[in-house]
Amino acid sequence: MIHKIESLVSIGKFGNYQASGDVAFKKLTLFYADNGSGKTTISSVFRSLAENDPTRIAKRKTISSMTPQGVRIIQRPNGTTNNIAHVFTANSWGSQYANIEIFDIHFVDENIYSGCSFNDDHKKQLHQFVIGAQGVAIQQQLDQNKTDKTNSRNTQTSLENQIILTVANGLTQSMLTQFLAISPNKAINIDAKITAATASLAHANSNAVIQTLQLLSNQTAINLNIDFQALLNDLQTTMQSLQDESLQQLFDQHCENLEEHGIAEPKAWLNKGFKYRLSQTESGEPSHCPFCKQSLDTPTDIINAYTEVFNAIFNEYLARLQGHLQKLGEINLDVEIQRIESIANANNSRITSWATHLAAGTIQPLTVIINDAQVLRDGLANVISLVQQKIANPSVAVNTTSLSNFEDQITTITSAVTTHNQQVASANVAITTFRVGIQTVVQAQTELNELTRIKKRFEPTNAAICIQLQTERGTLKGLETAYTALAQQQQLAAQAFFTTYKDRSTIIYTIYSKHHF
Image 1: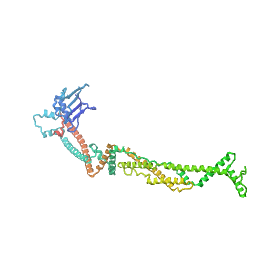
Image 2: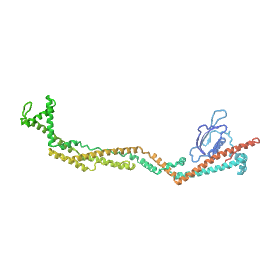
Image 3: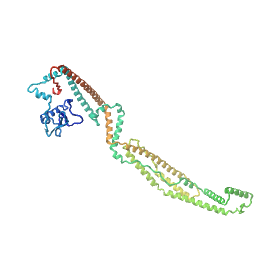
Image 4: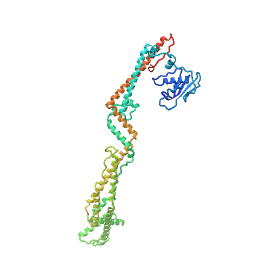
């Protein structure tokens, strides 16, 4: 008996059939399928094998197939496990298997009605005899069901094609069921979503350029290496303050000397001596030291010591002023201004480049570091002039307003640099986040297509077509359910018919499809 059809190549519907799974023939094997599915083709293949007639296969060459036709059928003798392969290749069978009987419309045409007229009325009467009056009525319903299903499928195909053509944006046949089921909630704010997705696609297309754009740069504060407080103190120094400092230093040295020579609490000791000296002066007595009796009316040594200390302090003071002037002269303010302006210009250029890609307001304008470079230059020049004026007349205090103003300018610039760098940090975080979030072109296009399909799903024209398609699909489902019930009713009617005639004679039950009628 036939055990299995292993392969069918370039024959009718079977472009390249290869057996898979358990497809072995049993004692009773049923092929059930719609018309045009290939049942008659399989019958022709078996008839070709039984008659060793290659033309029956050649006539069923698959349209547009360039692959040579081929068949492989396995025969297994009853009671054995031996397989015998019957192979059709190169337009011929390798071996014939004649032990096959095929009872179909061709058998009827060729063996029963040869030479006789067998019209539609005869066939209908034969059909009525085989399945009975009730079966005929059911068959008529089945035929109408098939017609209705065909019409429904054609209507659905037309509606589906309209939707696919109108919606476009990547909508395919396989996506229609999901498309019809889209919730109206997804269309909320759809225009804004599409605008964002369009921007994302533009970013994806520009990603190669975006990755070359630079982050913003930080600014560095101006470091003048000036001790403003020390400079202010020196500018406010007068001859009196230098004298006071000299006396204090001389007094401190004297106290230290007394302490080194064993005088405890030298300051208290000197205070007592000073009071003793005042009492001598008030009484008109000659001034002398109560210990050594040395005259104090001509304090040459003290004056010399004071002069020596004063000269040292004064010279140190002049050296400090000269040091201040030298540091101020070494400041290259133009280099600092140029550095700040260069970074500012570079950042502004980068912001302009990023503005074409980032959402408005993503990067805020950066704080200006130097509002007026010339005012800053003038401020430094005024401070230098002030120090020169002080060096020319060190004993007189000068107006230090220009120094305070210049210090305020530098402080303002330093504060602006801090604010600027905080803004740069925020902008760079936003830029980096934006870069990381850029999709591929495929991802962005897919998202945009999906959103556009959602919008089109609920446009009035498309929504009406979708309702029609959903209704038609429901109609087809109902027809399919009804067809199954009718087929079961027909089977029960046939069984009842055969039960009635089983004791009278042998009945051959043949059902012809509408196609054959």
